[in-house]
Length: 196
Image (spheres, one colour):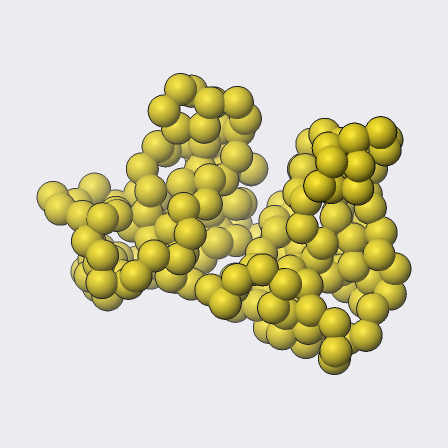
């Protein structure tokens, strides 16, 4: 599973080494061109440029449009070429393949702050899930849940496999709600129980 990633700081904040660390923090590695190409063939469409493992910066477009290289361009993987691994800053494409354990939305009587979310998963004998685990459950298992929930990096997301009106009307996707204030009691939480 290939997934685009950027940290709480916002877009285009990672040099290559930060990008490697960001993927590692999500139990993933920086994706190779072949992995990104396979994801593009699987309909990944992402308009932000991200690092790949060879030090190049690319992004996959299945639906050509103005801000993403132009409307009249053919669909494909857009390539910025090799970039300076220290000085240049982009997002990153991460790759994860191992999925050992159970990813789930924790049924809880109330909405939670980030710290309460972390504790709620621990109480359930699990850990707050990582972004890569959500993408893996969504892509590999067809996980579908229309509830926004906290993830370990402080972001709030939810995975939709069956597009529908109030959740993700046009496409199956992992929807991203941003990096809200961690004190907001507005969200549930996704947990992950690893197999030992």
